[in-house]
Length: 288
Image (cartoon, rainbow, N blue to C red; front, side, top):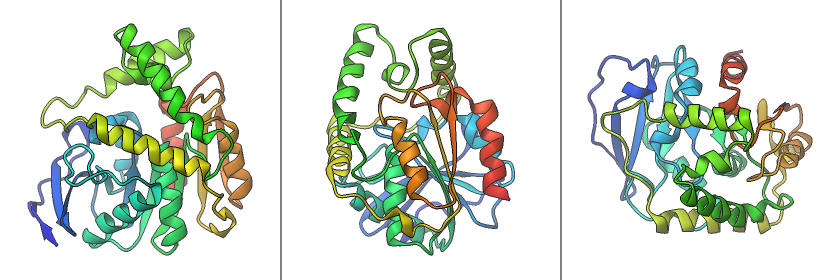
């Protein structure tokens, strides 16, 4: 293990200013950022399909980082992390475990969104003692109904976005009504708040490999989520076209004692549309 950045600068308080760091383990160099006060159990963020470090909404991260040590990272082969993207969600979970343990951490809270939530499920099933609490937003279970249709939806909306010169997330994450369009523009704008030292974009090949991994996850036999004993918060919009909202309800049924929040008139990015309501809820859940 070689931690290539041992400088402990003053604590970053906003994600826009969080220092970019690197750690090398098992022949892979992982790019990550951290902010918030050190000490206690860190909250590790698992990001969505095609996303890099620059795709986290600061209105979600900053409130959590006010009192908690927050870590975001690029999966292998994504953004500034080296290596090749694995072709399965399970292998991505193995990489996440490698990264977390390389940092010398033995207990985490997980905040996950979309594909990140799939990775988080596989991680916690394989390493139950690593995870204390779990946030699963805009995601679904292995083998969930219509989970494998994510691929077609994604490609269609990328085409629509290209034709209108928009960010694909405006179509994939939000409803195409007035409220949804407004929320989409505001979200995309927030993602631009970091101006210096931005991450590399994901390559087309890496993105396609991730999509295949999601499709495989969707077509696999379901995992036994009754094994999960961690307090779990599940959240989504009521009209998620990417990972259908019914899959959040399915997760809620399968994970005993879990909490479920469904936001009205919202899509896949419901937690971003309702960040002013959701962020305090997440803070409360993770801290209490």
